[in-house]
Each structure stands twice: as structure tokens, then as C-alpha cells.
Length: 215
Image (cartoon, rainbow, N blue to C red; front, side, top):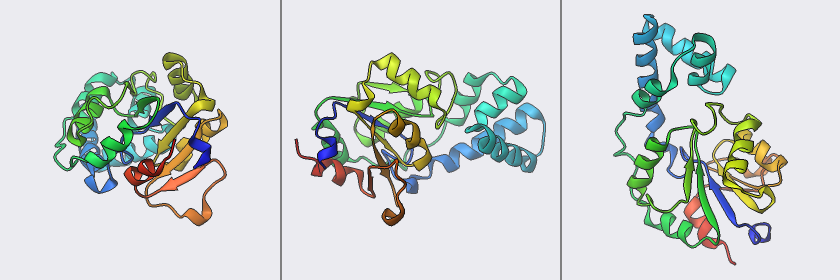
């Protein structure tokens, strides 16, 4: 993995990247989002679910759609939908050890909140493994794959993209990092035979991938 020898900033998406999709945290969040929309907009659960899916598709997140279309105040929404059970996230000492041995800075870039990230990282055993968490509030509530949050992140944390690696479970969210000069790693069960050009590596096991790196 020679392409990663020069990296000094390791940037990790949080959900379904640092923990597996089998934890199904988003299933809980989706229910909470529907409930919130029902309460705020006085519509049926079926209509709320349809609206939630439509805004996600159009705006990248349901929250962004609610802000644009309904001038929703975001903080109450974020607090409510992340009030979930984090027990499905198991401790992962091998992953935390592999992250700890990486040379350079370690940062989290999430579409969730800092509180959500803290709860996940505490469960993983890595609450102090990262220099910072860049969340959706820091991104001005603009979600990936829009270029603007990446640019804000790089500027705020003085990261040189040509010396950074970005880990993410959604291929589209790696388009901008690759265009900026970052190395890109797609995490999860993806077909390695048809990887898009903007993905440098793919791994089904993040801990094993990081452990194999040699410096």
C-alpha cells in the first residue's frame, strides 16, 4: 500500500465505517426522524416517511430538506433523533489499536453530531483516539457529497489534502476527497471488481486493513 506511506492525516467517516451496518443505528434514527416530523408537521407516519425519503434523496439529508423547505430549527431535531440505544455498538480493541498506531493526525468527519460521535466512540473504546470530530453543525448543516463541507473541514483543521486519506462507506462521498488529492478507501461489502476510478482501496475489514499498513 505504497500510496499511503506519505499520509499524515487520517480522516474517518463515523456511521457504518467505524462500526458495521449490522449495528443498525440508523434504523433507530429513522424511526426517531419520522416521529419528529409527525409531531412537528401534524401528518401521518406514512406521509412523514415519504417526506423523509424524498428530502434525503433531494437534499442529501432529511434535516437539510426540512431546513430548506420548512425553516426547521436543526438543533432540537438533531438532539431528538440521536437519543437512541448505542448498545449494539461493541467494543473493538483491534480497530482502536490499529488507529492508534497510525502516524499523524486522526480525525472524524461525520454527518451526525459531536454527541453522537462521542457515544459511538465510547462504545468502541476509542473516545480519546481522535484529535477532533467535525460534525454536521461544523459543516453548516450541508451534507456530503457536496464539496463545501470538505472545504470547510480542510480549512478549519489545516489539512493538506495531498497528504490525507479519507475512509468512507459510501462511494459517492469519496468523489470530492479524491478530486482534492486525497487517497480514498471505501469501507464495507463492495464489489472490488467494479470499483470506480475515484476509489484507491476497498476493505471489508477496516481493522485488518489498517493493521496491514507498513511505515
